[in-house]
Image 1 (cartoon, rainbow, N blue to C red):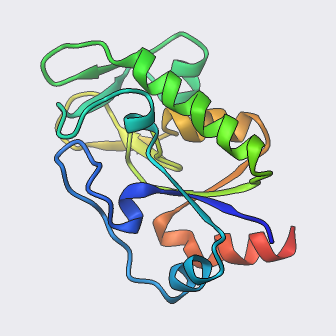
Image 2 (image 1 turned 120 degrees about the vertical axis):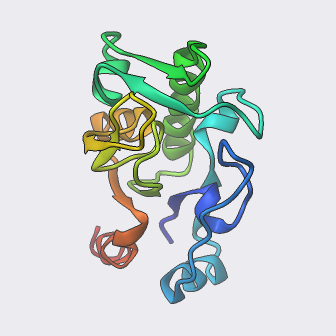
Amino acid sequence: MKKILVSACLLGNPVRYDGRSKALDSNDLDALLAQDRIISFCPEIAGGLPVPRAAAEIQAGDGDTVVAGRARVMTTDGTDVTDYFLLGAQQALALCRKHDITVAVLTESSPSCGSGQVNDGSFTRTAIPGSGVTKALLRQHGITVFNQQQLEAACRHLQNN
């Protein structure tokens, strides 16, 4: 059975920058867990960032521009954490390749995982259209990424491909 990559925070792991999770309550998720089809992953932790950590946002772009080397990921205190985000994204891609994963469910608005929007870099929680770094790299390599509100669609896609 095909596996699916899921953001660790959506599975209840307290790995977000603030030491919390964004646990989902979902029958679809429960079924995937029961079938041992989920690979849990946090790109920020995998990239070497601690919990808790300063909030980070992409400056002057989104994940695609970070991957292309034209934008940076910065924390509220001005620390450049771009390399951590890129390393985590590369590890997510390696994990997908190792397990032949073609579908991921990642956390919306995250500078790593955002699939349709990210914050604008002003640290005012202002969302703009765009992708997180991990989402961008996975998509560039043919992996279909959904956010947590699209879990049902992700399950259908997984069944059909």
